[in-house]
Image (tube, rainbow over all chains, first blue to last red; front, side, top):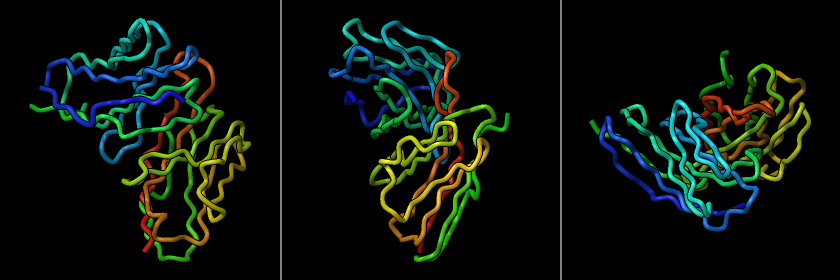
Length: 109
Length: 115
């Protein structure tokens, strides 16, 4: 599996967009980029995933660079409830997810 | 839909005792996963089932751990005998293959403390 690199932490102002970067320079052509988050004391929650094209759903947008070596998760209007650890995972499928340290995002009022 | 249900939510036991964790996946899901989360090792996959059959148990730490899925709506993770280093939060997740969002849905977890 491709290794991912994420910043350990970041702060974001409530109501502003939060841009979470992820580097995955060794990604293979058939590997997807998955994003999950874990709010304190809860199980991880799926956010979004993509292969090549940018993706958007009701929770977030995923921007993948043309060379696929990095991506950015965008939370368009961060709320206090978005405070969580965000995990970027690269895999062929999500059968064997391997969660790294992730990025701890703190949304401040 | 009630989501993935796990029981108990908290378990405190003494070293050497048998511990059984339970999971009810989302109805209609054909994959079930067991994870363990600790501060030191993060979130690790222990085992997963497809259509009630164990597919990959390479993450099970040792023979003290066993998992079963007797039917599509129930799975157990058993630790016998338990040790203090087994203290962790254990998550169950389920997944339905196919569709746009064929991803894993996690339960609330069982916090296990072995004294």
